[in-house]
Length: 244
Image (cartoon, rainbow, N blue to C red):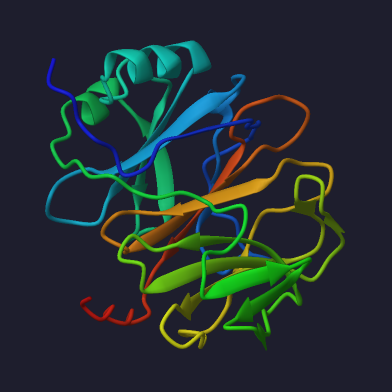
C-alpha cells in the first residue's frame, strides 16, 4: 500500500456531538458536531478531496492504529473512523463512505497548534507580544497560536472569558485571528468560533498546507473524542516571507 502524507495528524484527547448542522449565532464560521469520533486518544487528519477544488475530507483514528501506523511508517490513515466531507460552498458537512477518503489522491503535510508562539511572537500569561511589544487580541486573553506552513502568518485563538491556564481551556466567546509574522499586524477582522467552555476540552487547531483553511476541534461533553469542528476559510492575503 502506498503511503500518503496528510494535511495534519495529531494525537489528542477529544469528545462528543449531536448533529452535522452549521452553528449560527455565536459563530461567524461553519461548525459541526462529530458524534462518530467518540473514542479515546484519537488521531485527527484532514485532506483535500481532489487536487482542484476546496472540499475537505476529515477523519480520525483510534490510538492503537495511529501508533501502529507511526511505527511502520504508513501514514495513509487506513483504517480510520467515520469520514466527514465538508463543502465550503454550503458550509455543511456530511458523513461519506470510507472509500472517499481511501481513494483520495492529494497529499501534503500540515502543522499543528503550538503551546506557545514562535519568535518573533511570544506569550506572557494571556498576553501576546511581537518583538517585545504588546499585541491586542480580540478576546482580550490569548489561548494558543498556530504558525502557518510558510511561516509568514500566525493563527491566534483568544477568548473574552475565564481561562484555566493548566490546560488551557476557557469560557466565553472564542475568536480566531490571523497576524503577520513579518510585522505583527492583524490581517483582516476577527471571527467568532462556536466552541469553548471550561467544562469542555482544550481547543486545538491547525492550518491546511495550502493555507486556505484553519481547522479547529474540541472535545465536548463527558465522552472522549473530537466533539466539534469549526472550519475557518482564510480570506486574508498572507504576506510573502522574504527569501533568506
